[in-house]
Length: 317
Image (cartoon, rainbow, N blue to C red):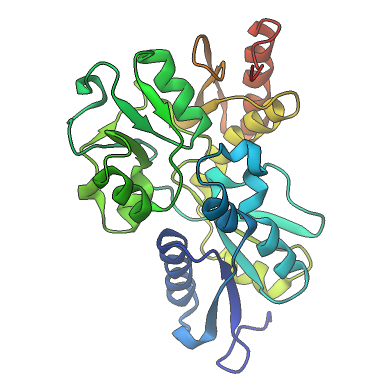
């Protein structure tokens, strides 16, 4: 029998220290406790400061791409796991690179939350209501390109930080509106912050938005057994398509990318969109196929979108 953690040997759960990251770690612990009938002290939540946390303070006005990309938010956590200082790590999947370091594996996902973007503004109810030339804050490459595509009149400014930091910036008049993930607001009990949720037909979300993933060492049977009991198979099937789509795109470019897979009976329906960074052009497509073919479905859609992209489509200048 696989050894379960005890109060003398707690399973160490690694996480960033933001309120949302901690909420996700607490949800993971609660699900593990319920699934295995274990007490809270069978688990220890370990907060790890990442390069991304430092970058948010040092270079808050620079795009994430310029200070290191998505890996900034995972590097130190994954190093701690490889060194044995933590046993598992809880991540927002939309922030995760598509490749894990040698020795680590992502094969556990919690049930997916609301995938939509939240429109947050002290002055307008909806994106369409923003006045001409309004200043909108976002650090998301995908959201900025989508906004520039549908509302080229808007002034887009860099806007990074946790929910509380962004709300303070709105109060201070740095911008008239910003966008957050509905999933994060729901997990923080702050759904009321959203003036409205933007339907996916209006703004296709980031790949894996709303999903929590739990990373572990490959050669760790205890963590494997514990996590198997809380894995949500439907979320895993949807993310298999979305992350294969993202991996194929990332292999040849760095560009604003949106994607979402949903179930249609016994099939998956995957929608994808790539945009020029300045929002001047968008290319969208979709694919349907068997759930068992999720990864190939995602890769095929990415290849079709890439084939339609003209030379220079992904240029930053």
